[in-house]
Each structure stands twice: as structure tokens, then as C-alpha cells.
Amino acid sequence: PEDAIIWLNLVKTSLRLKRADKAQEFGDKAIAVNAGFTPYVKSLLKGS
Image 1 (tube, one colour):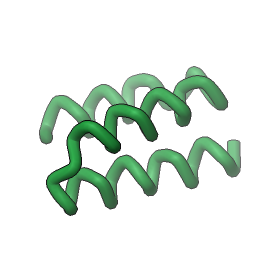
Image 2 (cartoon, one colour):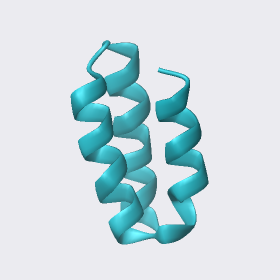
Image 3 (spheres, helix red, strand yellow):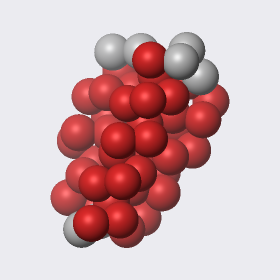
């Protein structure tokens, strides 16, 4: 789960920097590490 948290933080940072493409890439990696993060990633990306 630690790695998934890092990827999730990178999603948030990418969105702040207006880099939706990178946010999606990092979100996919977070989900690959821990599928339980799917709702969080989808929620963050939906708000972008």
C-alpha cells in the first residue's frame, strides 16, 4: 500500500500542475499496486 499512496500523491500533484495526462498515468499505477485505490483515483480524475 505504501507505493500506492506515493502514486496517489503524484496524481494530486499532477492535477495541481494541470497535467491530467500524467495524473491518469500515475492513477493507473496506483490502481495496479492496490485496486482498493480505484474509487479515490476515479474521484480525483473526475474532478480535474
